[in-house]
Image 1 (cartoon, rainbow, N blue to C red):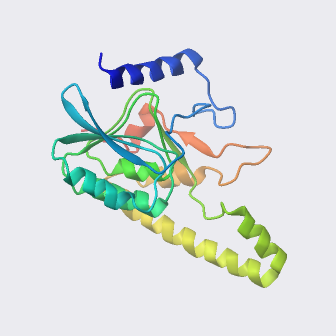
Image 2: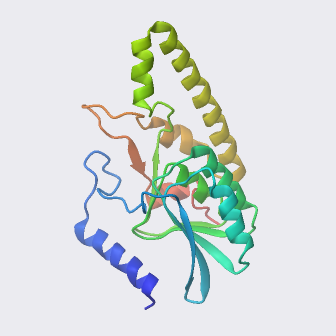
Image 3: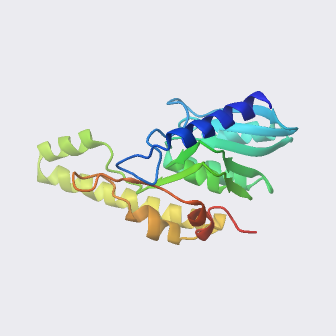
Length: 230
């Protein structure tokens, strides 16, 4: 067995042995393997005679350009394997469009790996797409309220500044929702993924219900055409 396959097999075996789920998000692993907490790297590996581009790390604004350069630089790339905790939402969408511009380029979430947040849209660019058994397509409610310091400062500055910030958040959220909806249509993914799954997750956990994430089952990735049934 080649080194990369041995590594993936070891990760999958560990997950099966521990079987640990996140108590706050019970459909997901307690310790997601979503790669390094660093800018997404793009490295090429040969696996059983197939050229694979491994994308792992945090999605940043430079990813679409870097991804296109990597694909253009090697016409033997057949699949893109990915794990990520997310990052720049707009860049994730744009990078997904880059992948879609190369007909037949496969995206895959290998067993034991997790693709979360903006990575979801990067993954959707592939056709075909595969979430291996033991791989995790992890979603949440996209929000522009993550910068709590900005919210607290606005509150301290008074009603007018708070109202302005709320208006900015509402506008940004509406634009992102429109962009996501358009992206799903273009990628052939059911829009119900947004309304029935993503938008039903809490943006911020509470004491009563701390869950903010959801990992789709194998049945669900097919129901919503995240993994096309062809």
